[in-house]
Image (tube, rainbow over all chains, first blue to last red; front, side, top):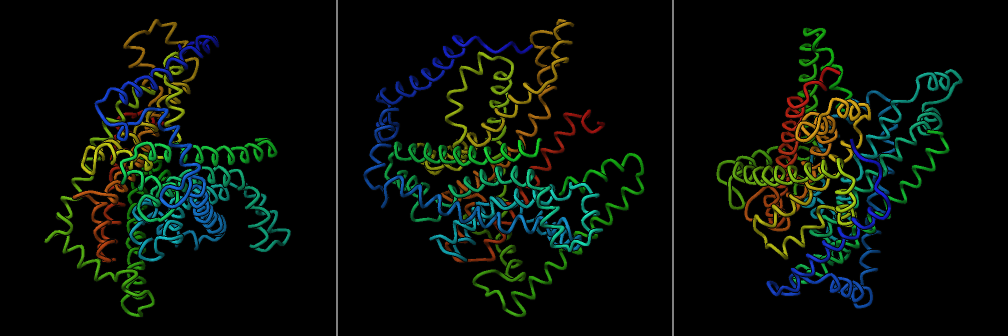
Amino acid sequence: MIGPPLPAQRFWGLTASGAASFLGLWTVAALSGLTSRNFLPAPWDVVERFGQLLVTPFAGHVLLEHLASSLKRFAMGFGLAVLVGIPLGLLMAWFKWIDRIITPAFEAVRFVAPIAWVPFAALWFGTGIGGPVLIIFMGAFPPVLINTYRGAKQVDRKYIEASQMLGASAWRSMTEVLLPAAVPSIVAGLRISAGLGWQSLVGAELIVASSGVGYMMVKGQASVSTATVMCGMVAIGFVGLLIDVALRRVQQAIETRRGI
Amino acid sequence: MSTAAANPTSAGAAAAPRQGTRSLGKRVGGVLLTLGIVLALWHLLTAVTGLIPPMRFPTPAEVGVALQQIAIDGYSNGRLHEHVLRSVLLVTMGFVVAASCGVLLGLAMGASRSVEAFVNPIFLVLRPIPPLAWIPLAIVWLGLGDAAKMMVIFVSAFVPSVINSYTGVRQIDKPIFEAAAMLDVTGLRYWREVLIPGALPSIFTGLRLSLQASWTTLVAAELVGAVTGLGQILNQAAQDIFPAMILVGMISVALCGWLMTLGLGWLEKRVMPWKALS
């Protein structure tokens, strides 16, 4: 049997000792002299480097500018996935023939890892904005489409029949019946898709980009500055977490309003 | 969408085998028809009308030639099966090691609140970092060789295994624990007969995510730098501006990923025969 929640004192004691042993082992390894501090920096070196990156430009920009350019690409790729995915999902749920055409193609393309689009992305759209955006789109698109389609397919038939009986056109049935009913499923899909899109963005920036956090990490790697790479990892993790928390808020708000 | 299509056939197969085979034949026919249409359209757009310029996207014939070249003469330091074997082998090794460690840690975290409290702070920091973001660190520490690739595969496969094994244990119904306690099931038997079977469905969800993540990460790592491997084909083809070979590389990546997922699905059915019944 899994015991009851730990008493607060014991919980925090264990949590603190877990964190302390992690940081302690890391510090010991860094200071042992087995490797250089560039190769394995101490925890406070990373914090210090973080402070530096905020004010002194590295790889052309300061950290926040790198983050801003990453976020801009992310917003474009994710926005495009939403703009294409939701209407297409609704159309597929409404018109059988569109479903029949799109589904096999989509299933085939979905198995290509987003990162494998890198060569074509660079060939078609270059390495500035277009290339990375395509890769983010490839990561973010499938969950939006799948969840919109599933959400719309699960709508109770009698609502659709009622709307048709009242003379609604296909357009009105889709926008006023299917879409609102599918919203909870769509928002759940958006969360997955934002996560995947953010991940794909990092991959894209490692390979094809000349700004952004991923690019900053590549430059840090090239100059064997582990601290810079670690700062990039923390920044990426943190921003990814923020995006997820924001979307979870939206999801919860919708679910409360719908009484789910 | 694929699950919706697969369920009726697997459920109907036991009740009406004849109907099952017919629908299978129909499905194969449908897939072949779609493939034919796609090929014809592709040929029309690239080779016949030239609407898509050949420098942007290859014609079917070019892809055939590229496939022949890489399969027989080799491309980018190896023949196709050598690249495939190398990538698949690396992923399998990294995945097996990471999944074993991850599932054990996840089960331990699920079973004991003390372990959970101890490990959680480390996990909370590492968890949001996307697998691909570990690539530069792995390269700084271990260079461009296999060791760095094993590291990124390990990291990307580890996290989903831990999370899902942990959730799996926590989702086991309370009456099952009570029954186990009443029957005095403890020690190794408790793990083997209560915790692991109870958490298995969730463990497999985690393994599937782990496998996908490690495959994507490996391809990305090979794109950044490698001697052989599928990502290296993509990298070389991109540098040579050889669209047909890029497409061959992409199709190989997709096919291998798909086959490995199928393999895991097969294993899941073998390990959890009771799930097919319900």
